[in-house]
Image 1 (cartoon, one colour):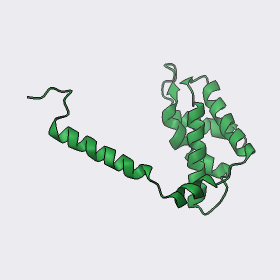
Image 2 (tube, rainbow, N blue to C red):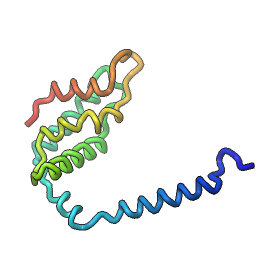
Image 3 (cartoon, rainbow, N blue to C red):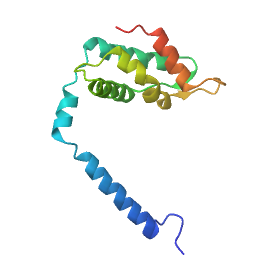
Length: 132
C-alpha cells in the first residue's frame, strides 16, 4: 500500500504528461512571440494600470491589494487582447475588459468586508480611476 504522499504509477505518469505539456507550451513559435512583444502600450496606459493597482491597495475593504506583478500580468493580458483584435497597441478598453478576471483573485478582502467581493473592489477601482 502506498502512502498518501506517494504518487504511485498513475501520479508519476500524470507528472510526466504535465512536464511534456509544459515543454510544448514553452516552445511558442517565434513569430507569435515577436508579434506579441510588438504590441505597444503607452506610458499613459501603464500609468492607468498602476493607478488601478493603487486603488485596490488603498480600498478600506482590502487587506492585501493587487501587486505590481498583477499589474504586469494585466498589461500582458491587455496586449494579448489587442493582438487578438488585430491591433498593434493596447487600449484602456482592453485593461477594463480583463481587470476583474486578472486582478479579482489576487485581492484579499479584510474580515470586515462581509458581503463584499474582490470583483466588486476591482469594479469600484475601475469606476473611480479615470482612463487616460
